[in-house]
Length: 216
Image 1 (cartoon, one colour):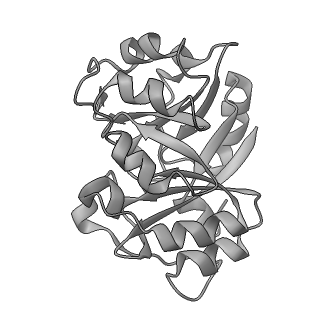
Image 2 (cartoon, helix red, strand yellow):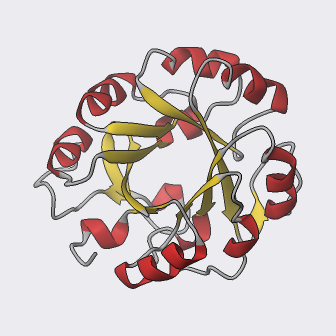
Image 3 (tube, one colour):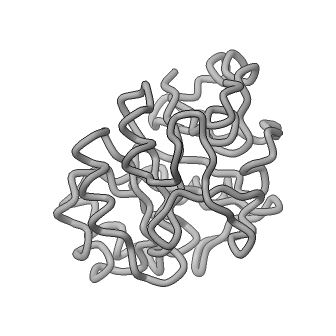
């Protein structure tokens, strides 16, 4: 099972917060760098891949293109910039990264079908308080996953409520495990969770807070 570190970007710097309360996010403190510069942090991470949520893209439609271009020179990048439509995708299509289509922002399935013809697509099942965040998919996360698993072969199950809490709830995660797809999990993961996730058949996990605090 692969461990993928997380860096969230807002206002051009790395930030941290809890449970998706983005208005409360603060500049990042990490054992891997002396600053909140996402490029400096990425250079010092001892992992091949990196997951980045570009909150300027997700919240304002203004992704940090220059920073993403630098990050993809350093790491194999998975990036969520809040793609809603084809225009949003075209803005970052030149960036050498796996494109994450997040349920929180994607507007329709037609956009997914178009993008997956051109790029390596990962679909993020964005869950908050047990409900799927989506403008068009069912609020039940597993029902939405069932509609999508024939269209996409790599998924992130992201429990936004657990982000930054060092506490995870895996009670429903088994429902997503399937031999036909890769499942990555994110939200509150600690080092002691790894063996449990591995036994469940998870392909990888997204780790932020525990890793950057130096307790992973």
